[in-house]
Length: 598
Image 1 (tube, rainbow, N blue to C red):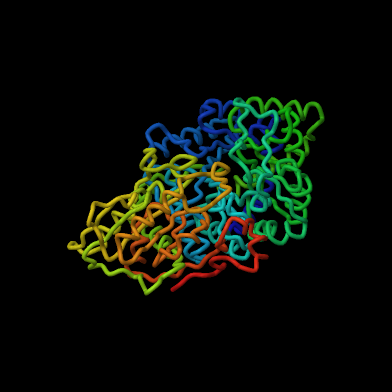
Image 2: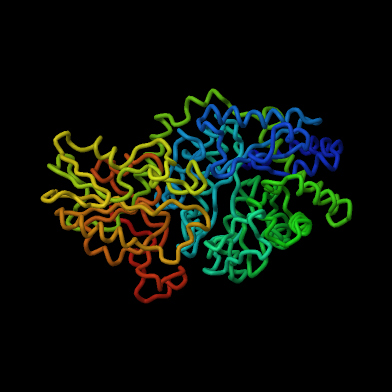
C-alpha cells in the first residue's frame, strides 16, 4: 500500500532539500499551518503559503453537491500554485465513512459495522470507492481510518473503532488505507495517536481558560472523549500503540494526534510518545497533524501551547480559525529561540516529503471526470454489500428470519423505519449528523423504501413510528427499526447506553399486534437490551449502516445470509462497564465477542 509512496518520498529527498534551502521562515511556517476553509480566502492561502486547507464536519459550500465541492476545492489548490515557490496545497476532510460532507455521495457503514463484517477485501474496495469520490472533488486527504481500540462503549466515538480488539482493528484499517492508495494517491491519517479508546469515564477536564471565543471541543457534555487514558505502558503498547507500529511498518505517511491524555499528559505535548516512540523507535517518516484546535488545550497561553506542541513533535497544526495568531506565535518562538530552526526544518521536510510522495508537485488536483461516479449505482452496490455483511443476528427464535416476501400484512414501526439520517449517524453532511426531523438528510434508501421494493405487491404494509396502529390492525410480523439519535465525538458520551423508555414502550405496543417481532437496532455501540430481549423473536444489530437501507432487507428476506460477527462484547447491564469489568464479571456478556447466528 503506502510502502510504495513512502519509498517514493525518499526518492524525492534531494528535491526536498533543494526546496527547503530556498524557503523563508514565513514560507516554512505557512506549510505547518492548516486552516478551515471558512476562515481563510484563497488569496490569503497564497499570501501566507498555507500548507493545507480543510473542511470540518459540515464545512460545505453553500449549495452542497459534488460539482460545487470540486469548484470550491479547486480555488484553494490554485492558490497554492500561485505562491512564490508553487508549493501545492493539500485539502483535507473527514471522509470517515464515505465522502460524507457531500450531498449525493455514498455513505458507508461506520467502522463498527465494518468490524462486524470482518472482511479486509471488502474494506479495501470501500477505500477505493471513497478515494474516487474524494478525487472527483479534488480532495487528496482524508482524516481516516481510526485505529482506536475502544474499551468503554459509553464513549461517543465508539462507532469510529472497528473493534475492542486490536487484532481485528489492524487488518481492517490497513485494508482501508490500501484502498485509498490503490493507484489514486489519497493521503490517509491513522488516528488518534494514542490511547483515545482507553480513556476513563469522567476523566475529561474542560480547561479553565476555555470560553466562547476559544472553543476547545471539550464541553460539559464530554465525559470520556478527550479524557485521560490511565493505563500502564505495557497495556498502552500492546493494545493501543500496536496499530500505529503496524501502520508505520506498512508505510504510513500521516498520523493525527489525539485530544486525549496518557496518565495526565496531553498527547499534543507528549514528546516521549510523539518523537521518541513514534518518530524514533517506530521510524515514522511522515508528518504529524494536530486535531481541531487541540494544541490550544495545552496551556492558557497560546504562545506556550505552540511552543510545547511543536517541540513535542507536531509538524502541522490544525488551527483552524485564527491562523495569523498561530503564525505570529510560531514565528516569535523561533526568533526567541524557544523553537529551534532545526525543528521547523524537520517538520517542513516531513510535510514536503509527503507532498512529493503523493505526486502533488506534478498535479495537486483530483479528476473531475470522476464526478459522474459520485453516488453511482456501482458505488452504492459496494455500500449495500457492506451493509448486509455488517449485520449481526443475535436472536432468532423459531427461525423467524428470513421473512417471506408474500406476507399478507406487515407492521413497520420505530423512529428509524423511514429515516436515512438516523441510518447514517454522525459525520454525515453535518458534524453531528442529522435526521428527517432536522432536515439533514443524505440521499439513499430507507428501510421502509427497501421493504416496499422487496415484498409482494399484495402485502399490506402498516407504518407507524410509535406503533400506535388503528384498532384491529395486526399482522403475522412486526418490524421495529430503532436508532440512537445521531452524535459525534463527546456529544455522544452516554452514561447509560441502553434502549430508551420510548423505544421499550413502542416494542410493547408492537409486540401486542404481531405474531413475530423483529427488532433492527441501529446504533453506534452495543446498547443494553436485556429487559426487552424476551419479547423479541429476532434481534439484528445493524450498527450505523449508511445510505443503503436495502442491504438490511437483503438479509431480512433471505436474499443473502447473515455473516456478521460481533467485534464488541455486548453488555447485560450498566454495572458491566467498562470492558475490563465486563470481562471479569462471572455472569459474562449478554452476547460474546465473535457471536452471530448464521
